[in-house]
Image (cartoon, rainbow, N blue to C red; front, side, top):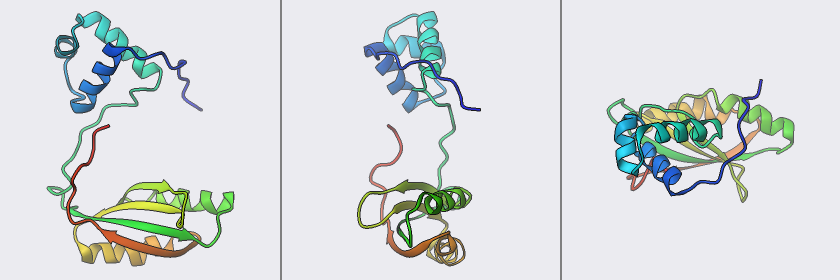
Length: 157
């Protein structure tokens, strides 16, 4: 069943300040958030509920350190499909979502069909993921890998 969302309200400067503060630290207590944006606690809590109901805030999560978790190797993979019918795209999408090493998957307009961000421990484990999972995805015609040397900016909206 689809989640029901309220109509998107106009965002004022307080709403934008709340969203910016929460994107930096989703665990901010309401009292501290209120202090930072210049409102009292009750209006901040009401605005947060409204922003959640309207779909601006999708949830709260811990941001994990992939390097400490043994996933320091990042590769971006261009994927070209053999066909791009709705059925082929749906089959690819369904299977790629199940691969834990694929951190992001974007359908792209251009010379290839998808761009994947793949995170593994090292180049050897990436090679295994490529051979055993990525190249076996439905309708994959070709791939091209770009290995990241350094993350200059990641994360925040």
